[in-house]
Image 1 (cartoon, rainbow, N blue to C red):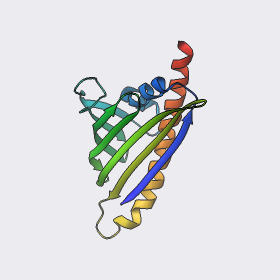
Image 2: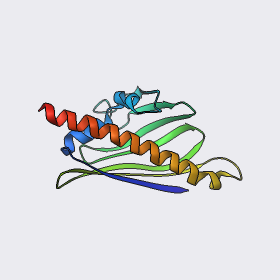
Image 3: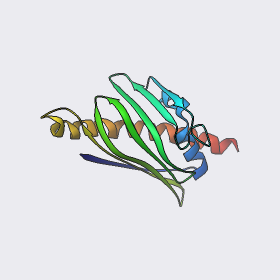
Image 4: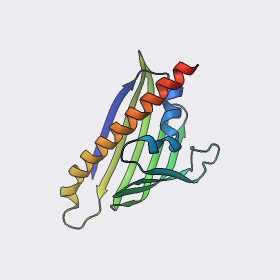
Length: 151
């Protein structure tokens, strides 16, 4: 298993950052993300607890379920299906107000399910995920700042 933690301080209010992060419809603006579709609405809000999203990133595909939701401080998820096949045990995005904006801490724990070489592939896949998380958070930052300016 491999643990990846990405942090970023976004110069925007926590509510704007949280909303930008959970908005699945905007993920397709991120380089390498072809689409992100909501296949099940959340129990109390569209992208909230119980929501299921499918991300198409070309050679990588993910079906994730929102398993924890505490607006605007935390979202937890589990990848239920993926290509390549992952064992995903934990995913969480924590947000906290800090001087100058919002601190985002994104943690995920996974392993690539490839017999024999899976443990060797985990760090390489981790690098790819770290790049992807950075691209997503860059997009979230851009949209959160724009949202804050509109108010």
